[in-house]
Length: 155
Image (cartoon, rainbow, N blue to C red):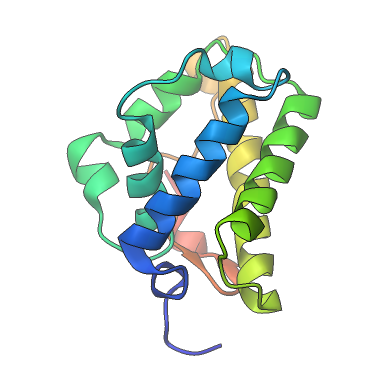
């Protein structure tokens, strides 16, 4: 692929904010996922945007302002089930279409692999009863066209 990052290809912060806003609205209206998200939080779209931007090669605002531990902590105790994880991925992919994100195969494949990986990590962390049961990921993984950079996964 080109030197362009996923962040740039997605339209930067503006494009990702539009995506995350639509996605969160769909999650809050979904009977399977809404219990995990409650009524939503005023800063949730911003936090989702910061995380996705950073993981797609954009600014590191999520890490600087919240830190990866925040992501672990918000998932702890949610007890995410496989059907909820799959629905999360489905709604996110639908949001890509709804907001007009690029539909080229390399981009969509990268986003899908990012979602599959991230939702598996979230599910594992949501069901962990001890620190040792948490996924070893301790920093925002920087996703590329070919998938996760392996050095970003190490704790």
